Each structure stands twice: as structure tokens, then as C-alpha cells.
Image 1 (cartoon, rainbow, N blue to C red):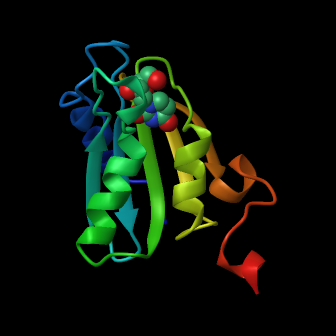
Image 2 (tube, rainbow, N blue to C red):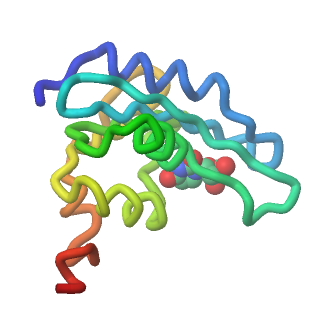
Length: 130
Ligand code: THU
């Protein structure tokens, strides 16, 4: 899919909703389905630290719970162009190994544009269980 600046803006906007009182590290995500629908997400932290959920998984769970399972692009926005954690890579890989991951900072500068199956090489999914 051709990168749309609107998706970058959506991810940056989503970071505004981050609930990150412990890390002060705000993350926004925009997950785009193959039909062009955009699901956004932010990180939501908790005083019980392991309960924290990342922006990427928030967006993914929102999308899947709305009946969407086919994804083309994920934009992740942070202050410094941070990249998705391993747990998020694995969760996304379940649905879209070829997902295009676009990593931006809050100015909209693109730090990386890379396929998920490169971020998570030799990933494990349903095909591995056949
Ligand atoms: N975080 C994300 O939202 N996505 C990632 O892929 C990396 C980390 C969040 C979790 C936590 O709220 C904060 O960033 C610091 O780890």
C-alpha cells in the first residue's frame, strides 16, 4: 500500500491519548486494513507494571474485535522513532507477516519502513503448527 501521510498523522494523534504516567513514553499506532480502514491505539499503563499494553496491540485488538483481520500497514509514532517490542511483533505476525511497519517520530519523520517478517525473522505462526 502507498504510504498516506494521514496514517502518520493518525498515529501521532493517537499518542496524545497515551496513559503513560510511569514511563512518560507516549506511543501511538495506526493500523491500516487492506480496505483502508484505520484503527488507532495508544499505550495504556498500570500501577501493576506488567499489565501495561502497548499502542500496537491496542490498535490490533480494536481492529480484530471489529471483525478486521487483514492488515497492510502499521504506523508507530514515538518521540524518538522507537520500534515495536517483541510481544507486539509476535501478535501482529499472527495476522499479517508481510505487514509494512512505518516507524516515525512526533514530527512525522520516517525513521524506518520495514516488513514485519524482517523485524521478526523466522517468526512462529499457525503455519508452524501444521
Ligand atoms: N510501548 C509501546 O506502546 N509499544 C512498543 O512497542 C514499545 C513500548 C510502551 C509500553 C510502555 O507503556 C512504554 O512504551 C514504555 O515501555
